[in-house]
Image (cartoon, rainbow, N blue to C red; front, top):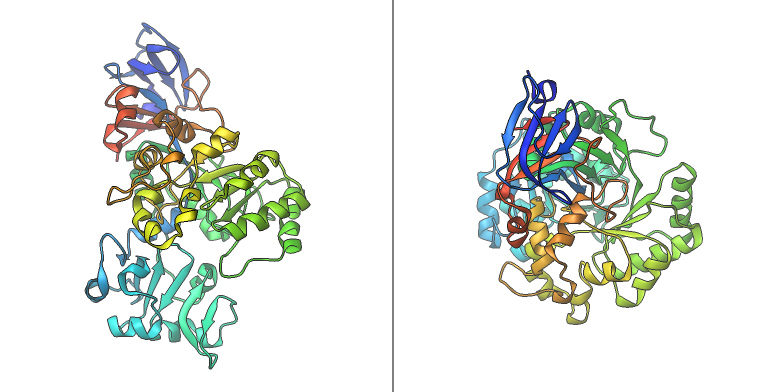
Length: 467
């Protein structure tokens, strides 16, 4: 029998607001919280030994299918690969997939500069090769891949062309378009992704992939993922889902750096989402896109739940406008730990304090939720929390140290509800969902040195999930 069928009694757990206590789980919910609870017949006992029992963590922005594909791809960027010889070795050693294609991920210009089809041909030309930039916004294809995908005759505006009108092999913001023109990969097995998430204490995620196709939604609903999922990419006209654990969130809008929309067009998209009963979640990583977005909100109006994804660069003089518009921010300080040395090299000194703000937004009253943006950012929520606290790069340099937040605040953002990111933390209480994470240590110890190794058990819907 499963835990959800027999029940679980957590003894001697540290629960926020209650000290050491017992917690009874029956079915998919928390049934009782109190000291000295008697064991029910057949109930499993877990002795917590004074360790913290928390609501499960919620990653407020990641990409499930991209995470699955990333784990099957060849790493082409730092820290795994450095320099052109390293990239050549990685691509030549890569085994083609079942359709004969090589898929690379994580590329950054610090490895071998700006790549195009000719540059990739010099590294590997015996098979179709596509390499994704670590931003997720750009694919680079070699000549064989350009031919097989039909880029020469393609009409997507993201196809970069040279002075003669021929495709260069660089393709911007065209994931769905490209997916339809290359051999289909096997259906994503999200069960493995779910186990990886559970090992870090994550019991729920917000998938931020825009414009999800019906097949992608079906694979999330039926693909063996134990976590609850909030979808930003469910189309406005999409019918309600059949899995109650998969819900529709705000509607995702991408402000692409390669081609920003006009103000009227953006305001119209926001109005359409609001009219359909959805808030919006808007991808925004530059100063220009942020100013455009704030002007569009001023025109279209704001609905409760409207949020800005990333807010990678926030000038101090617009923080007050975020407050007055009642917007929330879902950001990723993990990029400071992962890419911070590149930011120190490439971002003007005057702008570095604006990168992935946390403290100044929270102090002004803007709800701030942390997230991973995995696979493009580090998945581990404990690493993200540590990055929000320390603001240190791989080399140990500080980026925006004044934006540091306490570890307790970083954790609270991961405990906020999917429909209220950055809001009050969920609690372990009777009637709550039995989505829980048990640590090896008390909460103080976990916060002093955030580490996913502190996770002992993760429970989802009353069942302990084995990593």
